[in-house]
Length: 469
Image 1 (cartoon, rainbow, N blue to C red):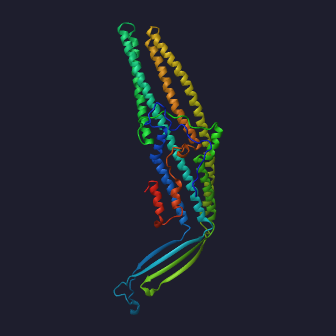
Image 2 (image 1 turned 90 degrees about the vertical axis):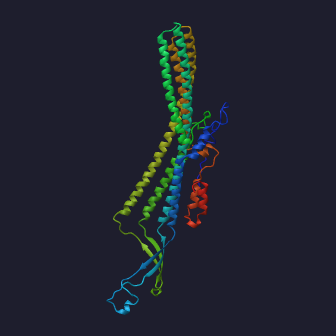
């Protein structure tokens, strides 16, 4: 079974990954760095890779069923002497029990023909392996998308802390100015109290922002494997399809959930054939070699050809057939539902991108207008035409607009990669992160022919290569 590779037409590269703003030093961690780290340290990927290797072994087990089974039996026996028999028949008894007799039996059993049942079992396990590989790709997408979310959240919450800290400093200065003006009789105690209330509110907002940043740091460490220190600016948008229809077409061809469901349908179809073959007979060959001790019993050898067919099973065979058909219908419905969900995810991602872009444009306009309003209100307040409360309100409007834009920018970045994930393109290979990736076919190629324990040197090399030995 060859490894299947996907070559998406829409995505040649994610151009923005790894690009740094000119003002940042080379030591800043980029989104690409975070994705690479998440891929390397993910325990979830390790878990699913082990699941895949277990599925590979199921193929080996099914292949082994096509081969002879050789077993041996050692039998030890002592018989009680029968003193009612003539003395001649009790020779060698000595005491009450006879001498110990041993028998070594070598048994070779081989299913010669079972009307394709063993072959169908192998094919079913092969399809299961392919489905499990697709599930591993889905997990890889989930891990990388979680890394994008963690990076964007850590970056956004850090910026929220920074602007909130700046707000606390500005309001502290305004409180000091209000206190000075109160001391000379230019404003009332009310203006001072309003500034004090705003400062308390800003400090509460800062505490909340710091708490969100701490939570984001922990989420970052859980996914990326370390705490964020200095994060580079979010990269440019990756290359995306021009329309939802184009994205949906790609998703229905390439998404690992679709691939997984297709292989499960094939396995279920084979399961129906296997259930039907259960009505057929089985031809088995058995060879036995017996070597008794003492030798006077004589060695013996036999060869037997057995034909076996179940004539009546109390309805078990018919039930197995019906169950196989039901599982096939379930798999087919699952494939149809997977197509619906993938198309919905693509549409939702496109809608999210449009919404966040519109929000960012609106917030830019709001920030520009709020900044002008704040500057004007502050100048008017120095002339006595505005109160301290007016200045604080204007400053809060500007702060809210900046905070909202930061959140929208982070959400837009995540939406880009949600679209790639919905299309089935959010993988290390498609993102061209430039690191060695796990080869799901390596272990399969080493075990697919069910090698014996003394033929496992190649398997040992594979295990060492993937770090599992």
